[in-house]
Image (cartoon, rainbow, N blue to C red; front, side):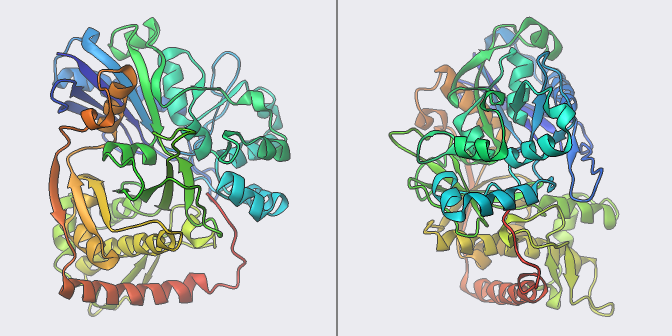
Length: 504
């Protein structure tokens, strides 16, 4: 029997999954650490993590996996990596990390991206980059250049989180076209590095690593890395992708009209388009999808809500560390609309769908005599769903077809209430599958190394767990609650006199 390994490099934890090549089934998985990894905020709007911690937790998770399921590491055909997008890791010539990673929800570079959007011109940015430079990786690198020049001068290569883990495994400094696009380093029209943005920011093209295909051998496990991981030296690393393109891939979402969703630390809806589309206000973003080629382009249109699972996680601490399934049951005891209690779930950095208006999470309509913990928990789940629907409306306005959505059976999609609210407020069909990001990375590795001839073969065993359709009576209730939520959002945030700006 041959195996595939997939690593999911998240901001909360690191997960590894072991798949059987023959059956396509997940044989075992492990996650480390058990408690969520810390995100350090040295100043308001900042968010940093130590890349070395990601690697150590990958080592720990692999050891736990081997304890759970005995397998011969020499029979692992390939390793795939998926990772938190938009992070910035800086390496010197010795391959050492120069500073903590500036991760996806860090907002410090917003002003640089906004100024670039103005100076380069909205028409230029939306035509060639399909995005505002916003708070993406390129703008974060500009922040380092301006604010930490001594560190900038030592940079040998810039890495995304998945690039860094692959480097730890192989010693090769590489990235992908999809990865470059997530950092807004990619020119969609010219199919090349976005030299115009680099020139504007004064960034050296040589700081970007070699570009490799998403599905290809990116190098082989070094003896040193193999010893740390307890794996076999020479095992190929044959796939890498950011978490949202990979989530779509893990659900076999590869063609125009197909939609994927996830609701982990952040919440995302990701639709495939064959044409280079952009939102004039850059509230949603477009990246190169994992299966895109110059001859047959496939782009992912991404809507993100930062304050998703992190809100649920925060509430868990507030209500007394209840298990999540008990929280879900408690939330379901309150009626649809939570008797007028509304949650605006925007408290985890700059929210792109709000054009970066200054905002924090807000609870509205609280009555001490009427509302209980159940109401607060339901209002939070509904608030996240309503934020999703607000973003979906933007995507629909761009021409993205949103009718059937696929999601993995994980995180907030484990909540029956969340699923019910999602399909009825958004008027979509939801398909739930038994898969996750680490399994998707493992399947990607199988394609990259050639043990699967095509995605159709790789996903032949993908298990659909349920299909949920909207129902007329619930649709009316949820869409009425959404209308009230939207009015509150407009009154509190969207009508703000603060000038909006465009971000990641």
